Image 1 (cartoon, rainbow, N blue to C red):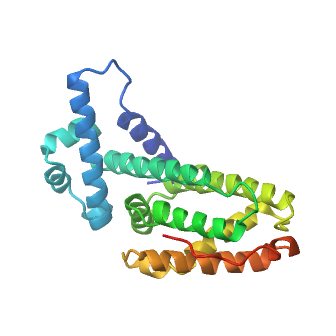
Image 2: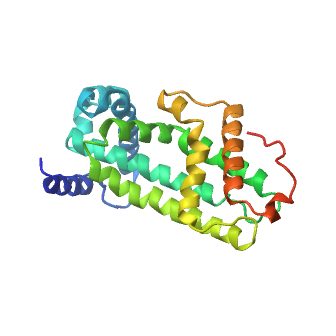
Image 3: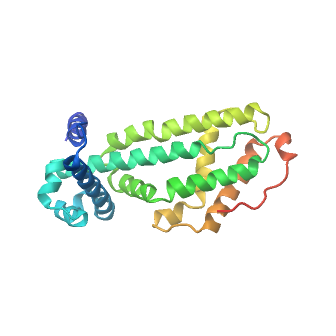
Length: 243
């Protein structure tokens, strides 16, 4: 299948997987509940078996619905896969932006606050179920659906980096940090926070609270060494941060 035809197919599938908005009654609520159950079950099966290994029968059993019900909602397995990826990516993006609202607003206790922020990002965005699903889906199917994950990369992480960069710009303007390129600093902050966790996440292990805190402390100390100013150095050293 050519790259062009893939994009056409993806658009068609996306449209067919999107329900029309109607007045909600008991029947429609039941249909929405079935769709949600199918999506949740399909995410589990696709992550476990990969696209090629997953079967509609297995997804139907996991969702506790009939095989025909799956086809009634999603037409074919590929349509269902696209719907699963979009559902997981949408929730992951929402959680990331929710975490951005907890970014430190001033530099009074900046190191402590950045450690706490890094813990929240890792715990709620990278170590949760959606984070696990997204990693597995990209690892297993990123080559098969490059355009699908590229769209997410631009609309999800790309926007997050810009938003986080703007928050670092505000702190830099206050004199606690000295940053020349805010987007680079944002990418480095996220990468540092995830550095000590990558291997265990790759093998499906969840970090403990103490491992999350240790990873965040290491990240913030490195980040502050690179971007901190004398004004920040005059403030108290890192205190204990609960997980």
